[in-house]
Image (tube, rainbow, N blue to C red; front, side):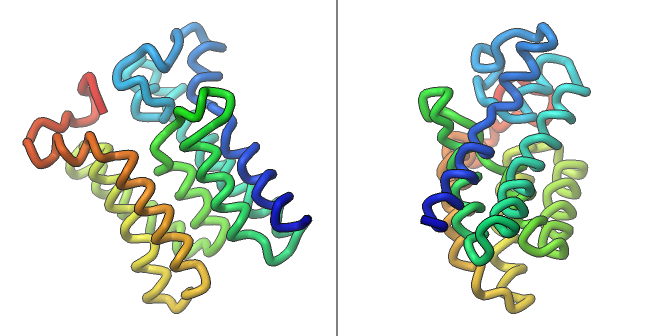
Length: 194
C-alpha cells in the first residue's frame, strides 16, 4: 500500500491549483479565462498582479517540495512515486478536468527536495535565462532539461529516469511554445500569450 499512498499523497498535493485559487480569492478573475488560460505563475503575471504571480510560483514549487518530504517521512523509499504524483497532479489536476499547468515550478520543488544542489542548478538555469531572454517557456524548458543532465553528472542515477520522464512531459506541455519559438513569434514576459 505504501507506493500507492505515496503517489496519491503526491497527486493530491500537486493538484492544488494555487494560481486559480489566488486569482479568484483576490478578485483577479478566473485565470483560465485570462491570457493563455494556463494556471501557472506566468499567466498570473498577465493579470498585472506581480505579488500573486510570485505567490503562485512559490506555492507551486512548495507543493512539489512538500510532497517529496512528507512521503519520505511517512513512507521512506517512495519519494520517486511522490514526486511523479505531485508533478502529474499539477499538470493534470482532477479538480480542473485534468487541464493543469506546465510543471516548471513544481518540478523545481521536486528536484530541490530530492537534492538541494540539483534544485540550485535548476534555479540558476531557469531564472538566469528568464532574466537574460525574458522568454518564460524557453527558460523553463531549459531548466527541465538541465535537471536529468545534472543528476547524471553528479551520479544520482536513481532519479535520472524520473527526471527524463518529467522533462519529456514538460516539453510536451510546451509544444505550442516550441512551435512559436521556431516561428520566432513566442512572446517575452509581459506579452499576451504563453
